[in-house]
Length: 191
Image (cartoon, rainbow, N blue to C red; front, side):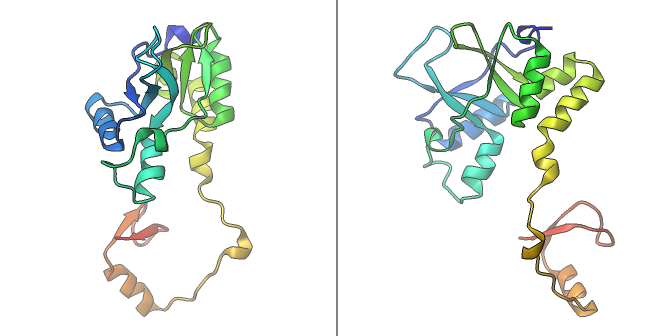
């Protein structure tokens, strides 16, 4: 199967001069997790301008929210991913899946023979059209980054003893709990 057989042929575009707020609104309204970023001054036949990068929901979280930048004042061109991972429309799907795994990217920009963007291939597309076994293998490779989590060297881990009073005080503290119950292992992020 070729990438062109399952790719999204109508990807969403946004100008690099738009704000992060505008990008987030487009993602929300169109239910997408990635927008192609273009340079409006250099138009092409494939899209509204020359492809400059992509902006993903993860980019918004890690480069805007985590750095406490103002969405209404931050330009897409300042936070977009410019290292674009691509595949060709006539490429075998298995080759694109391997590239997704190797680069740990869940979306690839699909290009024509001339390098112009013609679509987007996502992990969701692969799950929809590929065998379950191959799709899961691809997903595991792509999601390896999240599965590994932040790696703290063991010599930098500082454990502090806790008392029952410390545990009780922690339970009364406003927080966001991720996974489990307070009887199980969990991460607590103060609010």
